[in-house]
Image 1: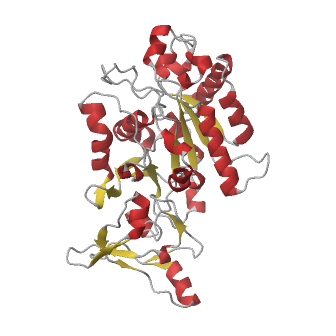
Image 2: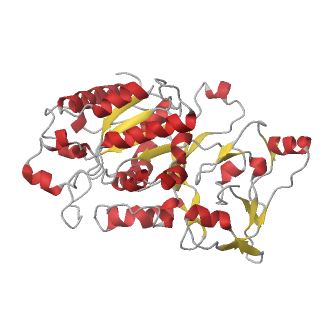
Image 3: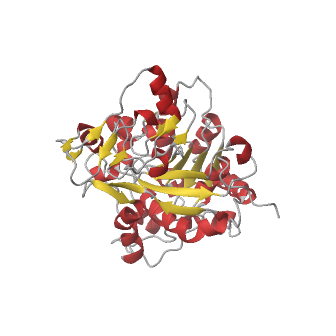
Length: 415
């Protein structure tokens, strides 16, 4: 049993419903247990017919005092034959969320089609585990997510290898365009990783009973065109208004003013301009205004990292000593001073390239933000999406900025 505050709600990392753990049903997981059609799972995954899954046991209603006690005293997960599920989508809850030990914080990573999100995800997760966890000082391990193919929980590491690692690191190829979640139910399932950090001094005041300083990082690789679909936006971008940090992945060459400064040969290799990045940001602003009831002129208080992708192609558009072109080092914490230099340089460059819309939106609608330039691949793939090699640049900076803003990691001491 675990004691939690009676007002504390958790967030489902799949559908982002907020609820009291006392309201979480349990699904029978025993092979000998009864099965039943589950319409909640069918609606979430977009199936035509409900799949047969383990029987769902709904918590007893009880009177007011019994319900209050159930909110305060949370039963442990892992009783052997059942697991807690979300009352809305009926997907399995991560273990520490189900126990009441953690409340997931959601970092939303979004961008238009061709912005490079899939390459960003695929290389970033590998770098976090192999480099930045040790460099910055945190631990990272995968949590259970869900396999649509097998219709059962599966480790995020396994799903990551299937979605990204094999293509990027074994086949040495860039990721292809992400299919829409409307036609591909597997994309409605996120990757979930726990990031665990040393407790800082103020955590002993703000979280005196917490055994750890941790968060669950939820990775959704949704297609850019889903931002144009009202129904998809409502169902699969609910995580935007639940997010405690947002990374906008922006292809700078979707701006005509920047694109025209490249050579004709290089322009011919780039994808066609479909949606200018400022349009995606404007839709997110509208979503916050509608769902959070922001007043006119009120700024969004969620920290945001505006992230220009494909930074390796900017080398001819910035001066040779630009901080944009050198990799970052975050030894023992986030290099906030370097972040400020890069952000100022990126903002100045965007204005100089005659594409100031993104900076204008950031300044007028967000309370806390920074600009970044990253490269997941380090080179442009050939016509068959093959890669000569991988040379990522500053890829973790936006995520580390958000972790710093949320108090999970400290800033590096100034030199």
